[in-house]
Image (cartoon, rainbow, N blue to C red; front, top):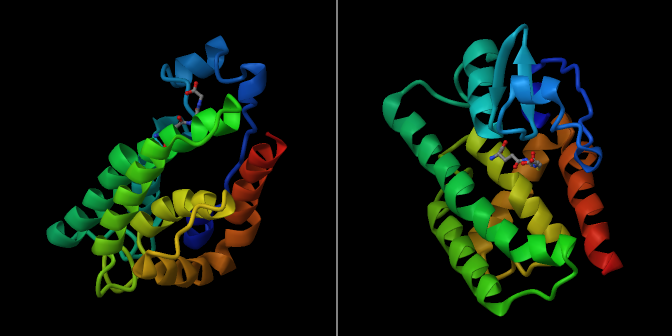
Length: 198
Ligand SMILES: N[C@@H](CCC(=O)N[C@@H](CS)C(=O)NCC(=O)O)C(=O)O
């Protein structure tokens, strides 16, 4: 949603209520057999996986390629960050918080340790760089800020990670004109309110 605003695209958002099983209807499954959200329908072109959607939107509608450069090496760095996000950062974050959020369990110390290990990797990737893939904002920042926003909303201590903290502030500021508070911060706050009910 933030990327669409950066690109100046108007989305026709359809709310899919997972709690009511709206993602398991025959119509939804025909569109996306993996029944995940988000799923994009761009005039009949269907795509899911949020990071693939972001890459497509920049390729198809970006005024230039700065958010996802065509230069092979620059793009490779962004792809590495996105793969790190989907394959490492997000799963470790979900393993840590899913049981706490949805099963009312206590935080598992092993999982906290693992989360810190992964944040250490992120810290290293940001060494000497204002943004995750270099000098300017790319879809890697827009993807990874979502998990970092949630960690911050849940009270996870990010203070040992100076580069991450500085990048977080810088990226929030960069995305504020495109709805950071309204979209991403608000989403984190809603999830955090589930945590506080436990
Ligand atoms: N890697 C996927 C994850 C998508 C995902 O798992 N979404 C959740 C909601 S946040 C979902 O659709 N859950 C319902 C289901 O998998 O049946 C992406 O980034 O799009």
